[in-house]
Every structure is written in structure tokens, then in C-alpha cells.
Image (cartoon, rainbow, N blue to C red; front, side, top):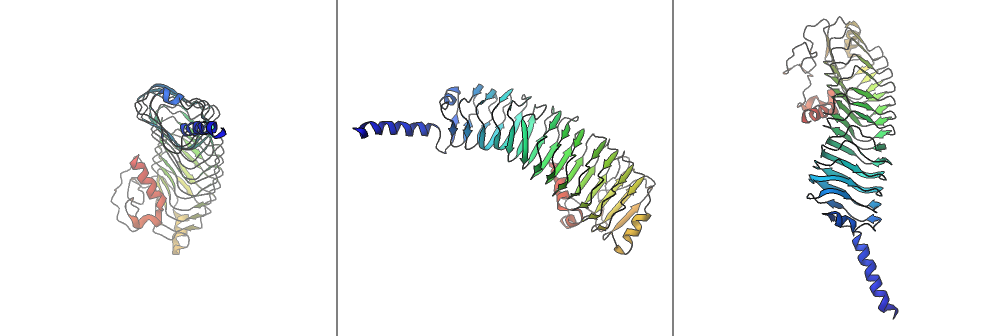
Length: 396
């Protein structure tokens, strides 16, 4: 008799378990499909929202998704709410939701990775609790004005591009990044603050009006700035980085890195015409090349002990080359090719390109040690990351 009644109960339990997923993809095409999972605290597997979804979607009751949550191409989805969801095991991916205006995930704090793309009407993130854990973050072509709700402690990659209305980025809790942090093509007045970021891998910034890195101490990879609008940059605690690049920042007048000691790669400052003085008082070692060109009147590298690559310094200003000439004598400090020219009408970078906005350079330099983005043999002198970084910028 027990078996007679127990078997139907067991079968019903198995159906209920199957309804919450069994590791396969769970597909949601309408609100009724979503309502069918309201009694599931955990959905096992990936959750895929149909590209034909229309209107608002509410995913109620669900607290965890073990796989990914995605929606691609649902141009008529206007809102997406999951108030109880606190974790997504894999990626949270939304793409091509061109009329989405509301994204409300008030309990969400843990995600495998975030990938948001082509969400032009989405102006804010309603992530009340705040996402504190994510392997990586990629946000491209959205209407977001801030990244409030993303409160990471540690992240892999952090890629934020082509968000034309993005005004501020303040990730106060972030202390470490293990892959590329990249900002490009956002609002020109974008202000970026990583108040507690102490260590990282690669960081590149383009078209921003402010970058604050007060706690940054070490970067394993490149730190690069192209075409930005800020007037000054300070990294008061940075002691070590790989390739270091300041290129074509038209308003930049002051660079302050008072304790920078080591550049494990190339160091370039070019086409920053408002920079009047270059001074890195603690810099001792550059394992690649030094390549400074522009309109500056002073250059001080008083602690320099080793430059393994070439040394190129050219300026329209009346800099003094004599201290660097002594460093180059007998290859004592500067091991590569040495060039230093003051009061030069058309200063150039070591690859022959113009070093200031008023100068004209040749892009076809053939001198020994000249850098080229496509010249593999030059990578040890300037640093592989610099070449990679240059290629990334062209790709954006």
C-alpha cells in the first residue's frame, strides 16, 4: 500500500525538480514561461530569454541561476526585473535590447561575468544591493550615465566603451584587477575614479576628462592614455608599471608620478603640447625605450640608472641634453641608440612620427631601433604590451 501511494508522490517530486532545470538550457518566450519557475529558488542550467520577447519581463521567486542568463536581440523588451535573484553562476549577457529602459535586480551581488551591449535606452542600473563579485565586466553602447550598482572588490577585465552618455565611473571598492581595464569612446566629460585600486594588469584610457588612481602602486602590464581631455594626471603611489604611454592628450599640462621607480617596458610621452616640464625624480630603470617628444622646456630624470632600449628626446623647447649625453657615454646608463635634440622645429618620436601637434614627422623612419607597430623585431625595445596597446586603439 505504501508503494502504491509513494510512487506517484516521488514521480511528482521528480517533475518538480525537472521544472527547475536539470543542467540544460531553460528557454523563456513569454511571461507565462517565467511564471512557471516562480516556485524555484534555484534554476539549474542556462536561462535564455527569447529574442521575440515583447514588453516587460518579471522573473519572480528565483534566487540563483547556476548557469548563464542571456537575452539577445529582443528589440521589444522594455523592462526586466528579478527582485529575488542574488547570483548568476556564469555570464549575465544582454545584447540588442534596443527599447529596454528598466533593469531591476535589487538582490543581485554575484555574477560570473557581465556583458551588456547595444542597450541604447538603458540609462541606469537598479542593482540596489550592488554587484560585489564578477569575473569580468564589459559594457558597450548603452545609454548609461553611471555605473552605480557595480561595487566590485576584485575584477578580471573591465571594458567600458562607446557609452555616449556615461558621465561618472566610481568603483570605490575595487582593489585589484587581473586583466585589462579599458575606457574608450564614452562621453568626453567622463570622470573616472578608482579610489582604492592598488594593483592591476593593463589600464588604457581614451577620451575621458578625469582619471583618479590615488592608491595605485603596481601594474604588471601597460598604463596608457590617448586623446584625453584632462589637464593633469597624478599617480602619487605608483612605483612600477610595464609600458607607460601619454599620447596626444591636448590639454595635459602636468604629469606627477613622484615615486615611480621602474618601467618594465617602453616609456613614451608624445604630442602633449601643454606639458612644459617632464620630471620623474625617482625613476631608475626603463627596460625598454624612452621616447619623449613635444614642446616641453624642462626634462629631469635625475635618478636614472638604466635604459636598456633606445633613448629619444626631442623638443621645440630649450631643454638641456647634457645630463643625458653623459648617461649615453660609453653606454653606461643608456644601452640603445641615443638621440637628444633641443629647440627642434619638428620633433619626432623614435618611429619618425610627429611629436607635437605643430610638427610634421615622417612615418617611415628607417634608423636603427626605430619602433613600428608591425615590426616584431622592435618589441623587446619598446615592449610587447605597447605594440598590443597600439593595435587595440586602432581597433576601437
